[in-house]
Image (tube, rainbow, N blue to C red; front, side, top):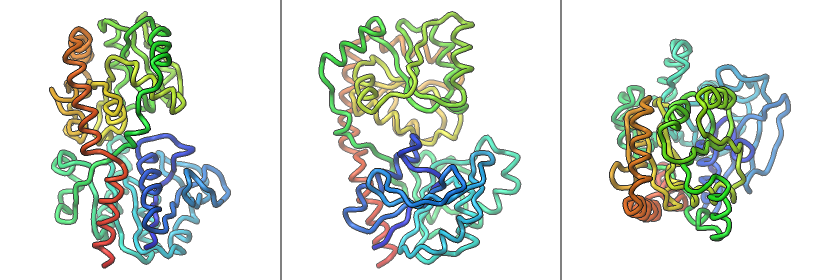
Length: 365
């Protein structure tokens, strides 16, 4: 079988939940099929690269408008593919419009990551394209029942939808040396509260910064993104203890996740459809305080089992939940153990990739 995964970016070089999911699906599905990815190049040049062991065609682009690449050659590259299965990761206006123009051969699988939230004005033009594209899908894969039930975009296509969660490579999060963990805790003066990920508007990080004044431990916000400078200014103006170490290497991230007392996931919009970094914290046995968005976040972080879920945009509730876990070591340990066991049982990337591949087999048999 030949499989083509289609999105705007790949990990590496772009680190993000969608990009990482695609890279993992490609990595495992290469064991059973010929796999390739189609993305954009962030330059005028079209080139062929090997990313994380996967053959990636990066199509030249003229730039990006509201995060969508402007790539006139994308439909042609899509038409040239000879895949039996084309997996388009949504939202992805460039790929969706290109597919409608090119009508490439192969079954169309849509991996639906989230609704479009912020670009409301653009939806007047994009929504009809999106609807028409989804109507052509042979199957639509959704990360959780929660998101399927609450997405207005997906309701007309429920009969095509299959629920399949996202996953992580749990063994990549095995405990580092005790010395590494101790060194990180010492760096921040003992136990600390941690976030890792892109600093984007929907991550709700300003509420974590505001909550820091009431949280009984230092707050560490790793990663980078367009909101970082404003978050640093906010922390400075509030006079709160928040550390911004920037992007961490994979090894450093794992060490921080094991060293942290609590992981915080304060997202505020439906753009946060699941939360891969929640699973990464769980794989390290670290409980999570997340927000109730009516999306897959509540499925990824089971309230009272693997952590606590609080209302979004509520710094006081966020601080109270974090402090409750900081003050109860036994509860933290129990939730952390249950979180680790659940990742092993339900969210192993290799198992997810296999289940997804079996769906491809059903479509092509």
